[in-house]
Length: 133
Image (cartoon, rainbow, N blue to C red):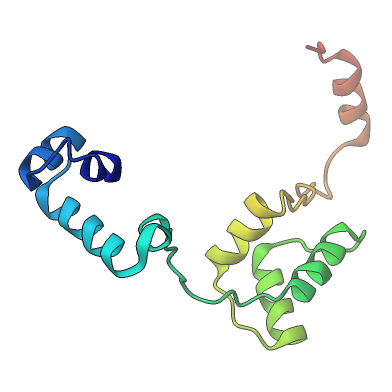
C-alpha cells in the first residue's frame, strides 16, 4: 500500500482499496495510523489483556507437585477446596478442570470401587480364562 502511494502508482483512495481487496474504511484507518505514528504504529499488533490469572506461577508449581505426589487428588472438587484452603483463592471447577486436564496434562486416576462380597476364586478364574486381545 505504502509503495503504491510513494511511487504514485495509485492516486485514488478507491483504487487503493480495490487493489488491496479491503474496504475503504479499513484503508483510511491504516493511513491514519501511518500519519500519526509512522511505520511502527502501522505494524503494531495489539493484544487483548483479558482477566489476570488467579493462580501465580508458585501456586501452579505447588499444584503440580501435589498432583505428582502419591497421595495427590481424587477429584477436581478436591483441588478447588485445596486451592481455597492453601492460598485463599476461589477458582471455578471448570477452570481447575481445564488447567489440570489440558494445560498440565494430568489425569486424576481413581480406582473403581470393588464390591466386598466379590468372590476371589471367581475373579482369578475369570482372569485366567478371559481371552486377551
